[in-house]
Image (cartoon, rainbow, N blue to C red; front, side, top):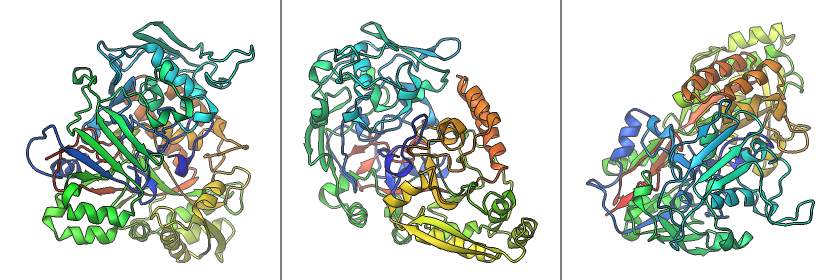
Length: 582
């Protein structure tokens, strides 16, 4: 999530292109009834090829260059044009958290210590002009993502690849004055094989290989910063129009895409027309009315709000067109222990007990849009979710327990603190949520002064290690369904950044935590890794460095003629590659 969570110099999390809900990057579906409901949403009948799918969005699909896009699992609209070595499994619910082959024949073959990964390309892969896709094209696509003028994509390879931390891309002259030099840590022994050499073990490399930086780019067709105007397609659709930097994006069939090489994308519509710059209320109204072309429309970035859900609740036809999902995301109260009184663990514990999660959830839009959280990791097996509640206070808080801890901390008469939050109406770090926290803490004798900042100023402040507030509302989401991109950026002491965006708000540098992160990273057995991420989450949680508040729920409306709605626990939103229209 670039604007929301930024990116650390090492491992970071979350993507902007995943989808914006209420101003935040999106979220994946419930594995039970919600997933079933998502599958039933839209028009009945078997999906068929043909027609035009309209996408109504608030945010433009800008920087439509695989080097610049920050996407997880291949993204949404971008995944129609850009194929990658691996991708997400396009299935409902938990099945959708799996990584599967895309351009490659498998999800990658590691060496003994997971410091080297080898991929082989499938046969018959072609670009939109009919020329074959080669491993050299994937190598070049990755290398150009290191160029400063094409920044914006995921940061992992800069940290993971040998030499990645100093490489500046193929456009800039190297120390010997020659341009076009590549990364020696990416080998292409032949046209179908590509090998990656890493600085350290990375058992989850197949997840990173879903990022759009792994999309092939033919060097001869690279036009640098202008490439976004007509990127060469490796997917089922090609770009035929890109107006005002993604404000309107028109995609039509790529005649050389072979579905036999692509088990994930269904590509039912003949055309996809993406229109952006629309107000959220207008988008939902148009989807609700579903007249004309809007009957075959969806949104990839606009959530339903409480008032809209209340109206839809009494309309069975509209309710049947709502898809529900959850993405790996947590909204929480963050402490900076370097600021008094938050250096005292008992003060942090007192606040943990005082929180009234019921009032917080109501402020965030109600139980239909938020679920209470007592763990940092989301309640999904893929992340390693392990249930715990180290400071049990029920649904409405325990002010008596909080007061007792404050007394032990030397504040028998209570104390006054400042809570920093965004003034943006995003129902996540908004004034409403801040006010709910303020009221809950007042019952425990804690007076909370609210410091509201404009959203950009708020983000800059909370990620500034030298000026981090002592107490603030925050949020975090993962680039893929695992504990790694969720816990490492927030709690790995080696990722504390003093000269840029710092996400380790507590500036925790615990050797035991750092070591466990490294040990888990070596594992290629994802189930085993998940268990250890869950155990680490619980261990860190004992220190009360944050107060998990809620995990958001995503509700999206589709047009009446849209069918085949698939919502995975990877993205939490409708998978545009599966949609069909009448």
